[in-house]
Length: 518
Image 1 (cartoon, helix red, strand yellow):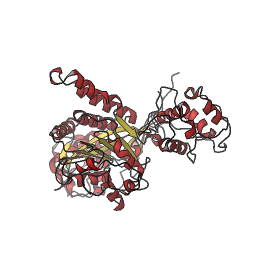
Image 2 (tube, helix red, strand yellow):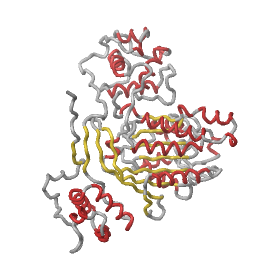
Image 3 (cartoon, one colour):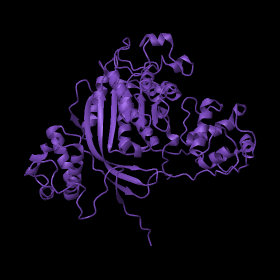
Image 4 (cartoon, helix red, strand yellow):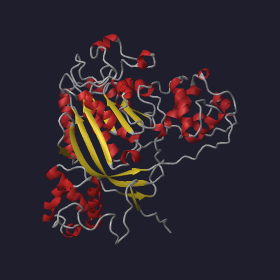
């Protein structure tokens, strides 16, 4: 007999009222639209004629508060169905610019297909109790066998093949070590990765003892395989809204205009609607759509999400808008020039007016804990300007517990990572609450926006971080390959393609939900 899979279960989203039982009225719902004047049509009219003249009354929604709109949406959805509700919402937005009708509060939970759960570490094992290594990654490594037997923990005295094998295993588990990678040397980055791995397994400390090595042996995938991780989609979509800011920096040759045009074309193609923005605010776009994503409990959820996209272009006030986006948006993306690691720039290179400073001028740099660009490099872009991220931290502008994704898409934005992870952000804005993406080579300007849009498509499809990064690099490469031979030499094409296979880096995956292995 074939196994019977468990049916999907419809459950309410957190902090919202439970779904009414069949035949039971929704809480506070009497079959009419609350707050509408006498004579307004009932939801039963929607069921009978969802495209009819009843839509003439939809403008009254603008007069309702959020709670009333929620009750209205629940009533329409129960009586007339999702299609009618979507139709009415679309006409409401189109007619009056009313875009704050909340998303459908109900989610469908399907068993299976979510994150893989790890078996917790045995809390009763001594740090130096001998373990047996079985992962082929560690075969033939005499020093690791010594540690497994209860020997002295890994240290800088072990630089070489044993250290590289440990680094490769940590990287395969999502502890990326983006600055030095698998260089075979025991430095601060390797020590930090060991500590992060121990924390994931419920262990304190940062040493690779027999106990930690045994955990690494059992956790790491076989040689040649990579563990994949999801962004924290549960937190990203938990309130039914996804706020994205796409910022495009200034380019002296004018390619920022092409980038903005490409972004607008993508928004139109995906069905976004432009909404009126307040004076001095970025362009605003909205889309309602269903998303299906994995949970840490191992299942998948489907729910409606309102995607709100802000687009920032070069010009006066852009740096300020970008700073607000870093504080307020779940996903913030910058496409443009890295300005030698100084930070995003929204005006000409010799002007410091619209630089958002990350890479110079902080207490972190003064203490020698982050590497700043040279004085000559700085003179091209900024002079004695405060560090904007440090200033935002001092002013308490960040919600430390909010989950965010930041992508810096420019020339070698890896240069920002020592500041971003070194202490310039407030305590709590760590890998648990902030996932970073960047570039480790100069990204060709023509490839920036295609990579960014591939990232957004991947996130809306709830792809893994590794799948998203791969699709971004493919998109960037495809643009280069599409240049007609008459417009580029073979040598120049090869040069542009050189860095694409490993261009995109992501950092912070190790504590994210782990995707099931095939």
